[in-house]
Image 1: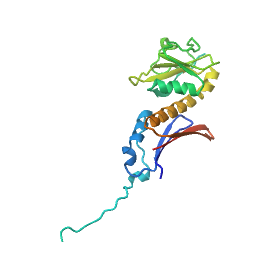
Image 2: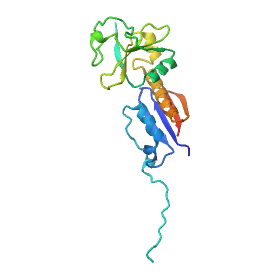
Image 3: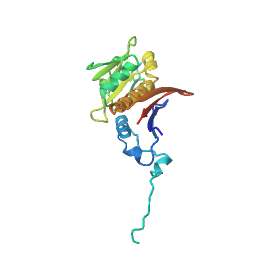
Image 4: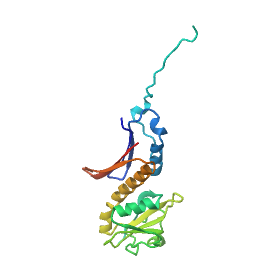
Length: 67
Length: 146
């Protein structure tokens, strides 16, 4: 899925900042996301979508090393 | 009659401001120390916070639009060091229309699009800007491929 930043300025001049295609903390660690957010500055605090709370899909393999 | 107001926008970059003015057909006049307004405060509208009568008409730079008499003043921000604020007399209906109403929404939208797209492009990213018509007017959207 294409990772995107979507910025909207509404009819009242309010900025809406959203990321799409990121999973978990990927979005808050992304260099481009942080750079654009910092450029816009004012009051863009984190507002996380449910997907933020998903873990990256990793496969854990349990091996029995103790015989 | 004068209606001086500070636009709700913190300007941190004059290049972005210049590009925003160009988007709307205007020009940033660097080091123009006065902006055109009614010229006399008659007390029919409250002064913006932190602005005295003596401050009206004075600025660091100005934005002018062809065919429009009044101008937008670029002044030092009263709240953020190194930043600028925009002050204008929106009693000029042509300027008010150009800026997007008394809250200068068109200007704020264009400035934000410009600022975000510059930041994205500095990281080599592509952007796509669009205008979305709504019941309340229009909003602007920028999509940046990361």
